[in-house]
Image 1 (cartoon, rainbow, N blue to C red):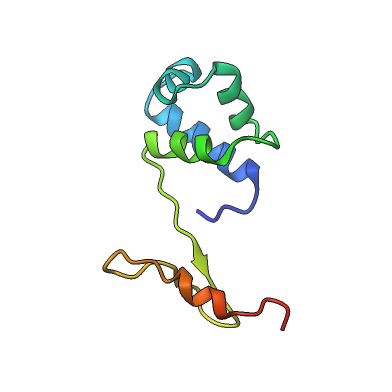
Image 2: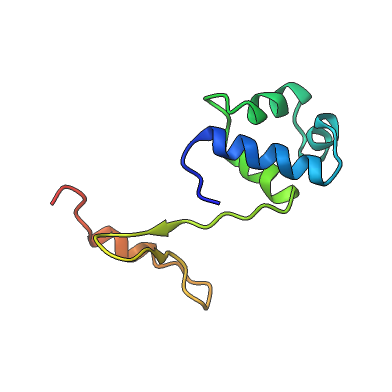
Length: 96
């Protein structure tokens, strides 16, 4: 699934939670947040903390991949040996 908006993440989290047969309170307890926070996440509310969102996704078995593309095919930012290729990005000029 391509994630383009907070609503996309909200849908994925809610669907995964329901597949796992967890309540919002169960998920909140698992990741150490309030049920109100989970409700805001599942609504795609702006201002939700990224770290907590990623923790919620991980606890539900959802995985994220960041891909970089510069005038060509998307490519992973991580090599197969686990080392990041983010250093390569330092040399790129986004304004050129």
